[in-house]
Amino acid sequence: MRAVQDPQMQLGQVNIAEIKFDPKSRDDTPKVLIGLQYIYTNLEVRKEVFALLEENLLKKVNKKNGRPGMELWKILVLGVLRLNLNIDYDRLHDLANAHSVIRQMLGHADIFDKYYYNLQTLKDNIQLLTPELLDKINQVVVKSGHALLKKKEDDPLHSRVDSFVFETNVHYPTDINLLFDAMRKSISLIFELSKKYEIPSWRQAKKNISTIKKLMRSAQNRKKSRSKDEEIREKQEKLCQEAHQKLIDISAEMLTKAQETLGTLRALEDFSFTDEILAVEIEKFVKHGERQIDQIRRRVIEGETIPHDEKVFSIFEPHTEWISKGKAGVPVEFGLKVCIIEDQYRFILHHKIMRKQADVDVCLEIIKETKKRFPNLASGSFDRGFYSKENRSLLHGTLNSYILPKKGKLSKADKDYENTEEFKKGRRKHSGVESAINALEVHGLDVCPDRGFPAFERYVALAVVSRNIQNLGNIIMAQRQKEAFKKQRVLERKRLKNLKPPPLQKAA
Image (cartoon, rainbow, N blue to C red; front, side, top):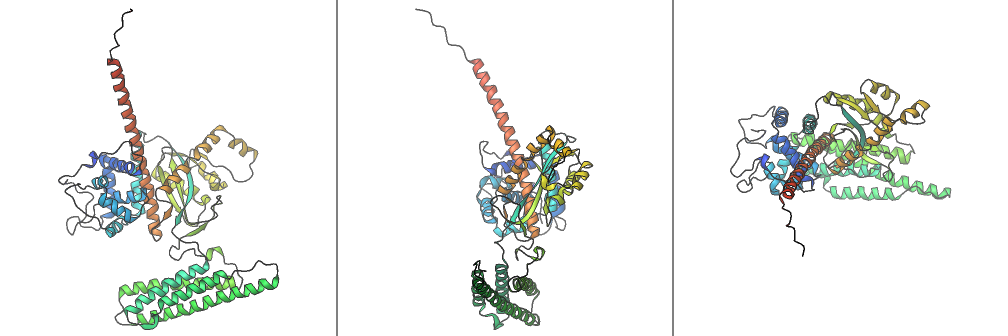
């Protein structure tokens, strides 16, 4: 049994519409909570958001029978807070149980309601939010923000498009330390499985891992010499090859032994289905290890250059890419590029995760996808990375106007076009998208702590929604401050008008 929101208020519960916030606060928490409060108190917006939550999360759930699950409104609030504050589940767990204003937003009474959220409950429920659901909620949030600014539905939207790298939580990858990761996981997992079924062949698992680590360190220290003496270089190269050969020989021997043990375990009559899942995971790490052994042998022993397409940069996050954008002080980043499109009201209309794609590959795609969601998209500005002759010609029929600087040497016609006042004005405004990227990185999209590509997608989508909700809060706070300032000025004028001038003193 699960509901979107319990309509029956409890004794001592504060209505979400009546929650008070410090108007002078500069922290992020009140802003995002004010945005959530607006979504809840605006009946049309709340109806749309609740309908989306119910349609996507309550398909196979009986609303009348079964034990009560977490309400969908609470899941959305906690998910948005986690991303906007850029915190882990441990801090979110503490805030959900101890922060009085957040508990009021979740629908709890301070004195009478002692409900306690478990850490695993938060993890399990927030993971129910899907990228597709969050994309639909984001459209509702953006449209409500436009309505809050009193923008008409047919008013044109002017956008700015750019991409940035969202990093995965991985260490710097080399073929040697990736081999060690694969060996460590293979040995430790096969040890657990062997211990359960009393197979004694992996009793010295810790020692085996330590042996692999020592061999890895030895291979890392045996680097090729840069000496001008050819004899010294050859001697050092031979030592380097011997150290690497010893590492891959012992690793290959252990991986073969692990596969034999898996065959023995699967032959047992009482081998359970859950253990089969663990066996499949062990096989995955064994394959990673075999691939790394092959690449080390080809690179070090045979002197071959490994093609970039064959490389894997993390065995735990295999979707990780090696990205070099040429930034000063940042030679390389590990993660995936994310392309965003922002409108003139600082709302992020849409985003796209780029897997093995460059900016030029997604230029037209992200515009078309955004126009499906917001048909009044009229213009867009890009940087040079999005330029191609094909993109320039296709954008003519998609947008009313666009700013797309050309790569390389400019012709006279291109120079004249890029020197026009309209083009210069668009280029100056385009740099504002960097502020949106920085805000996203501050509010969650710096390093992804969640494992797996589906979690990566959800993390990005939730960050975009939370940022737009915070933007709602910023707009509402600015409007409230403006109204308070007007009232203060009116009161001050009345006070000055009612002041009586001091009586004139007679001359002596």
